[in-house]
Image (cartoon, rainbow, N blue to C red; front, side, top):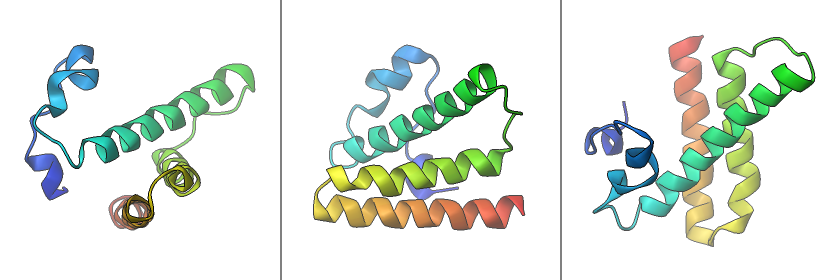
Length: 102
């Protein structure tokens, strides 16, 4: 588990998720919200494929790699420093997923 995640209590409801949960996190808040947005987007895209395109439910690895793909694609909107952090995060996400799930 990542050390950053251990520093913050998990959200208890939607207000926590999108509200006060990250209060006190200044520098990393944007990056955490950026990653959470990509996770939500990836889940939403998978949901749409199932509902509208009649595709079978993807396994967790497909969702994780979709998140990684979106991280790599969307990082172009960030500053150079944030791009490096995002690319490194996407690569680490893939490595951890491979280790845990394969």
